[in-house]
Length: 365
Image (cartoon, rainbow, N blue to C red; front, side, top):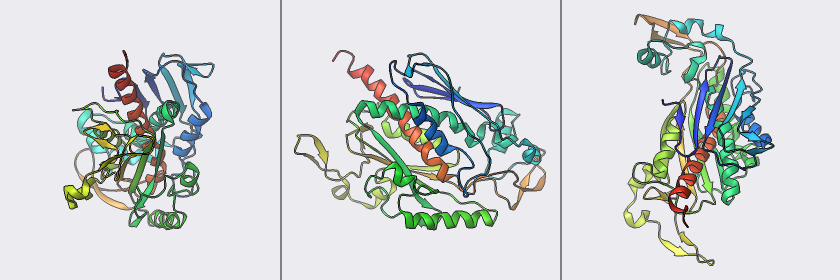
C-alpha cells in the first residue's frame, strides 16, 4: 500500500501520533555500510517536539531503537527496523475532534475515505509519522557521504512575509550556521525577524507557513530514470508527500516563465580539470530528468499549521454546522522542524536513484 517509498532503497513507515510507538523498516540497504547511530539520533533531535519556544511543547526524547539489520555497527543487507516510543501523548486534548472536523486538516478526508479514523493527534496524518523518514534518511545521508562526499543542506528561506533574499545563491551554508538559531535560517538578522513573526502568531492563537530551500552538492552526473521516474519528479513526490506541503519547484521554477531561452539556457564549458560544467544553473542541477553534476536546488512550500487556537466554523460527523477551537500542543509554524525532514526525503530519493543507476549501468562495467 501507500506507506512505502522507494524502489531499490525502500522504506515503510508505521505508527500513529498517540500510539505506543512509531517507526520505519528499510529494505534494500547494501551490506557493510558503517552506521553512526549518534548521527541518526542527532537528526531525530532536530525534528523532535519541544526543542524551542517556537515549537509544540510536547516533550518526547525520540530516542531511536535499532532492532534489526545492523550488526556491530554495520548494515547486514537485511531489513533495518527502527522505532521510537511515544511517551508524552495526551489524547484527551483531542476528544472534541472525535466528532468535529478541523478546517484544512485531514480529519474529514480520512473519515470520507476509510469510514474510520484515529482522531488522537491526527493519527497517521500527524507529522509525527515523519520520525521514520528522518531515521531512514539519516542512514541514506551516511551512504551518500561515503559515495562521493555528497552534502544535503536545507534551511528556511521564508516565514510568512519575511524572506531570505536569493536563498539559493548564498554560499552553501554549514549545518552549524543553519542550527545556530531556533528557526534554522542561516542569516541571523533575518532569523530574528522570522522568530518574532512565529511568536506573534502563537500569541494570537494563530499559525504561519513558510518555504524551505534544499541544496545538494558533490553529485556525480547521471542519477534519474526517465521518463516517469525523472530525478526531479521523484523529488517532487517525496516533498509533496510531507504533511502541510503545498508547493514544489526546482531550479528557476516558476520564475523561468519570465525569461527567454537565451537568458535561461545553462551554457556548457569545461573547467581546469576537464569536467563538464555550466555557467549558470537555472536547471537546478537536473536536465532531462537526470542530474548533470551541478548543485541540485529546490524549494518546498509549507502551509500554516491547520490546528489553531481560534474559534472556527466547521461541521461535525453528521455534517451539522458547529464551532471548534483547537486544543492540545501544536506548532505555530511547522517549518523549523521540517528542515531535517526535507533533507531526509532528498537523501532517500538520491540513494534510491544511486542504487538503481548502479544496477542498470555499472553491473558489467
